[in-house]
Image 1 (cartoon, rainbow, N blue to C red):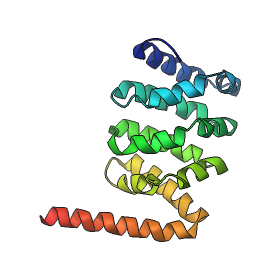
Image 2 (image 1 turned 180 degrees about the horizontal axis):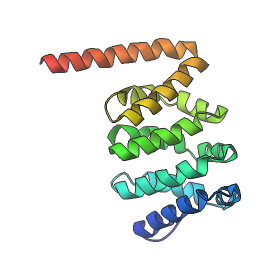
Image 3 (image 1 turned 60 degrees about the vertical axis):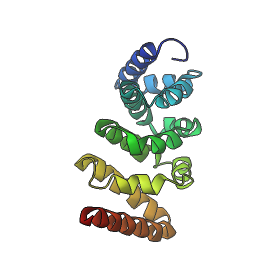
Image 4 (image 1 turned 90 degrees about the vertical axis):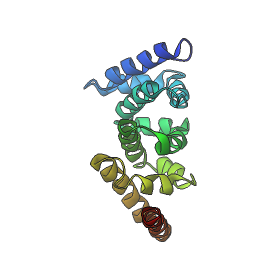
Length: 175
């Protein structure tokens, strides 16, 4: 996962997703315990010019994050920041996968803190309301609802952002 061609690392991520999705949760724990695997997955997320790499990586992360105990380590390697940075320019299927991973990571305290500390998180989530797909909208709403439930001050910020985005869309339409 750490060395080799990009195609080889994509194939490794695909294999990891398959192993982690096995019904036995010990496979997923073994992946988490392997040195450098989660770091390599985070590094592969930075390959934004190669959508196949991003998709394979997101599928692996989604299956690895299903057991709650794996999520802390995934947050610690900086995946939340990378997912939020990925959202604005990602393809539809990658947006849905990224939002799915974010929703899982938001269920832990460190994940919530990582989302709250990213300046573009709310904007990126609001942007995907009704713009990508029904699934992306549902995932965005679920995350935003959790954010607002955890911090009422975020609700005011969210309402302002939604209002501004709506206003910009109306002005663009009228132009």
